[in-house]
Image 1: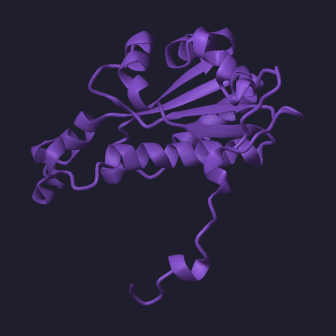
Image 2 (image 1 turned 60 degrees about the vertical axis):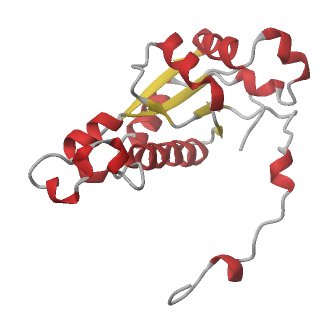
Length: 189
């Protein structure tokens, strides 16, 4: 995860390539309940003004993150999934009864697939990227950007060219990783 960007804009054709890949992801029932909100250049200031107001910025440990020339917000549509799973070929699942019928909310799963593809595509094309949550800011972000209230943002992805200096790992990155033997359960748990 890149947390410090330089000021170069992402070329439009490169961004379009990344976006085309980010929407070609698995979707439960081919629901296609994903939208991407893209903020470029000066548009990103609206996002930061909501999520990191100016008085808090001097103490923010990753000031180079605010230079990211592109912010992507994968947005899932729970109603689209409910509607799709109420159709005859999926009705037997019972998932068309409402959002509470879903033991795993696939609007988040499919949006997360898109986020991962965007991250990998960015790196593959020589860009830096960083995924972070909106947490308590989601309602304000949706209101400011015109995202319908019933849609759900999975997080935000900063994209741009990595700055030569100023990369600082998060505190969480210092946590030791579990070994492969602890994570992988061959043949069962």
